[in-house]
Image (cartoon, rainbow, N blue to C red; front, top):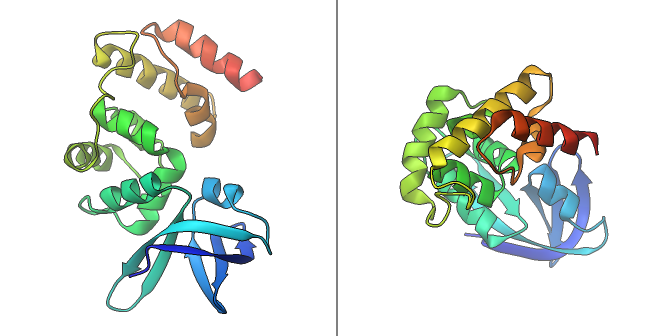
Length: 196
């Protein structure tokens, strides 16, 4: 099994695939957009943590900038009905800290921002990932003692932004680290962030 690769970047495909040459062998590695942006330019050296996915008829390498991302990915694809493509979409939408926060507070709507994840899949993922991810310390946001209140306000803000026509990435960035329990105030702050 391949656990990591260090070598020269031979090719970067904007669709999420890179080729890293190690000792004369080029490895095709699928990465999410954030990792792709963080990687060196073609010709420079790069290091990625690898999940080596093996099926009966195929082998695929998935690359991550950090070990924690790889471990989160492996936890996510361990959930029932979640394959590598959906696992990559989850981490592209919710970085590890945000994913843990969503699971700890049972924020199903945060997982619904992931393309291809509906309400039922998100609910099942929350239940399964609580046992797979280390969510200790993510139960509250530090401002309110009731995570359900914060989660409800965040849900309302996300829904409002989505109805205004903002995409999942825009919504995620607008509500990142957004704290409080008053929906109108939080929505104003999210909109101000988007205008900056």
